[in-house]
Length: 206
Ligand SMILES: C[S@@+](CC[C@H](N)C(=O)[O-])C[C@H]1O[C@@H](n2cnc3c(N)ncnc32)[C@H](O)[C@@H]1O
Image (cartoon, rainbow, N blue to C red; front, side, top):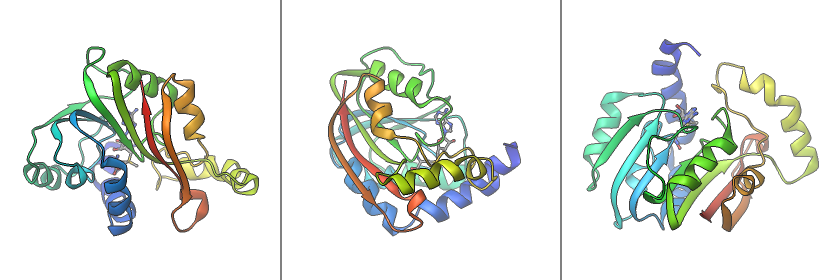
């Protein structure tokens, strides 16, 4: 993906598609038990920032891209905890083991190149008893939806609009494969089109 597209068009598409009220409610629900030192993998444009609860003491915000710098700085200055930005992919996290109380991903496991590797890294950097909180979209429960997702995944992924987003990843199985233990999982459909809105929300422990 070209740098110009990544820095200009994609961030605005992101704001329009997942920056509204509907996703704000989803973000708040997914993040309500975040606390302590938190790592967010795939920070994007900081849309989760207003939804972190009081118990969060510090956020490390990791993303390979730095998008909409002015908007993101404004969002960062509006929260009460310090935010450190790290420009890096999640497949190799530059942190010691057992460091974070919580790790968060929202709408990110669809896009990373190697989701199981990212999840293994998340497990490594979570302190024992720490929590991985997730809000993701992925593979549908109904076979006919999953089949349609399989057919449309490649055209969607390489369409230019989606910037590498996969619509058919079985998020729960990927989490389990990484060795994390799912403690809570909600599966639901968040509007239409269903191939893009099969949701997975919950948390897992190391
Ligand atoms: C669809 S956006 C979601 C952004 C944000 N999490 C949100 O909920 O609005 C996916 C994000 O994942 C980031 N990303 C892509 N590949 C990644 C990787 N390998 N590791 C970490 N983040 C990655 C992208 O730069 C982008 O910010």
